[in-house]
Length: 183
Image 1 (tube, helix red, strand yellow):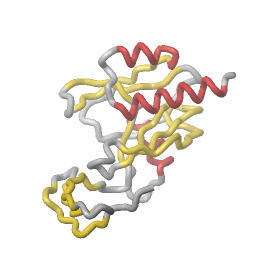
Image 2 (image 1 turned 60 degrees about the horizontal axis):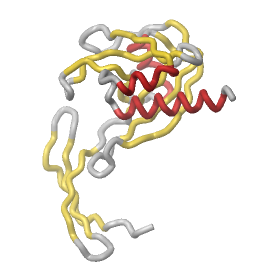
Image 3 (image 1 turned 90 degrees about the vertical axis):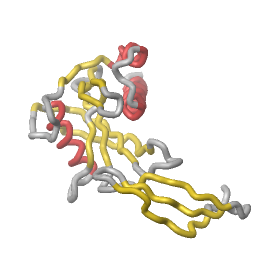
């Protein structure tokens, strides 16, 4: 594995309510120097949850996405609040967004979105053995909960309602996990 570049300097170049942009002055092992920009991660991380109503049915949500300026189907997600661990955050988010809690939550994978310029990671979690439970959330309008059969995942992918990469990855991971378990 190559030697990591030397960071000579980091400097904050922009900041908003959600993001900080940092300039990173790097020197690579061959002597080349470059200035990269990156979005700096804030907070305590994020969770994205695959809530399984049963071994065949996932609960998706339809919510407005400002980035694409439309409603999209995806999985419940949110940030980890101070003092929460990943599992508490996941359970809170599914209570807020799909009206269920989970007796069993397991970490599937920690993923990055765009590691070339983003320090943010999302923890993908599987929630099973659901029970009805609600908590007030921070969504500006009620979310539509859409039950979806995992055996119709290809249909979801072929359509254009679900385009978020993290949701798609998590759904494929869970489908494959359940296929292995049911052999």
